[in-house]
Length: 296
Image 1 (cartoon, helix red, strand yellow):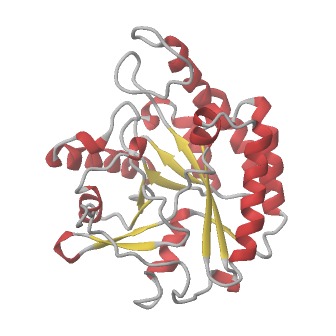
Image 2: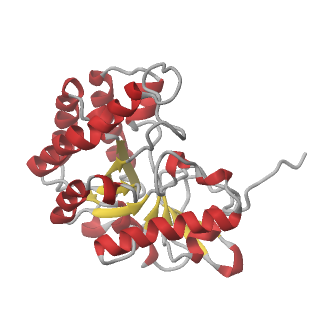
């Protein structure tokens, strides 16, 4: 039986692959992804944290907006306290809505990753020309604000069409974060002889699936981060691995959750001599510089 296949990469078991090091001879790379999102009022999809009535959904809109007004700043304090870099996955609408947040991340030297125009839309349902326009418009807004184009992309709602990797590669993107199928970066085949690197992005250590969907407690989420870190540190003795955590300020920035995140990140920061604490784009750049055949 021949099942439909995406054709982007071949199956490759984690065991038996070429072994390489991250900078400094380290084997575990760790990064924090901060999702900065803006939603239209009264239209389009939105993260429904609580059951809502007819549009406009004031309850959930305001809940999400708390993240941009308060939660994002609390996370910045934690990152500063622990000297942690961040990869900021940004809806381009953020630049017009709350540019001060991006000013603060820029001052820290954080990486900006494309994350669509707004999380009130999904790119995977668009026709190819419309999806190309979405990528172009989101990219242009980042270039205007940052003075440089982003290297990486995460689709809003992790939404992809069948041609999304092709469009991203053609638009000059070097890596994407949409796929969670591995613990190492993997090359994707794209049309016209191009390729794009898939950098591991977490769905388990992601506060939306964990806290909103599975209803894990703040204590459990913090413990999951520490437990995953400790286990991956052991596993990485045999091969390079990537550990990421995905955060949304309107969820993890809440006061009853933030302290548990701070303690988990402090545990990781205390091991910085053993771990490459970095940004997703730096992981991609390191892999792109490796000899062909090292990265599956």
